[in-house]
Length: 334
Image 1 (cartoon, rainbow, N blue to C red):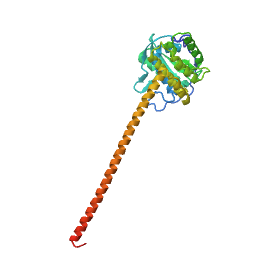
Image 2: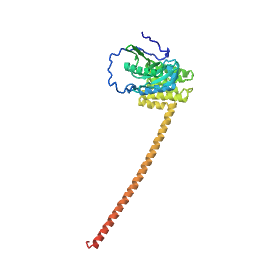
Image 3: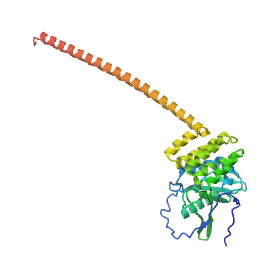
Image 4: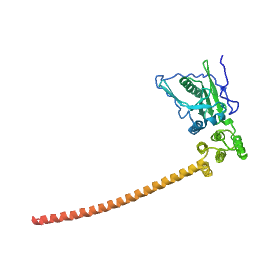
């Protein structure tokens, strides 16, 4: 009999999760080319959105202490592990993010914007078993689902085995409630913390009635008031929010946003980058103009030389003609 126990790293609070038992896979496909090299890497279909994937990896790398409670994980991480596993030099797997936890276990995170069902669970099981075998430690896989995924597959029954992951459904969180709580904290005069800011890049992935433009604008308004958080941390948060904006906003909305965030750290960086780019463009135009002027002078000099060569050739021709006439006279042929 199989025992189904609750993960020790999950608390009662945090994003809602759905655990739906998968049906047995009836389509057992024969494996072709078994002797060929197998590469278990994420293709474009596995990672539908590289922006979300990149943002989440950055946030986990720099703010894992604050991010774990957001996902309902109460245990603390003690380190970051490699995310590449090589098995017998035949296959290579890439996990999205791995954290070593304080109880010695490993928290393996996957970020998904589509529900791959059985295919995804089989892939996660390969990553998990390989990592567990290499590190000799238990591994728990958390799958963060973005988009409109509400009931992803979280269990795979395969033969006598039952494999489970812990799904974290981003869209079940309310972006409007989160923003209201942060604004209320600001109104009360309470200082904002790193823990308050780490949720801002996640706003476009949450549910709620507000538009993406409203959420991202509000996120920058809040970071502008985070005086108690270090500038490098605020810059990372704002960069993550802006990266999400490039995916969820139109070009027109992005242009408006750039005009509204001038007073934020990121806005200042964008202005500085714009000025640096303008200086580069000016320098490029100066060099282009100098080259054009030099080319024009060279062309003029070449033209003068060609004209002089033509005059010399004409003079040589006249001289040759004169010598020919002189020779004819001497020979009595003239």
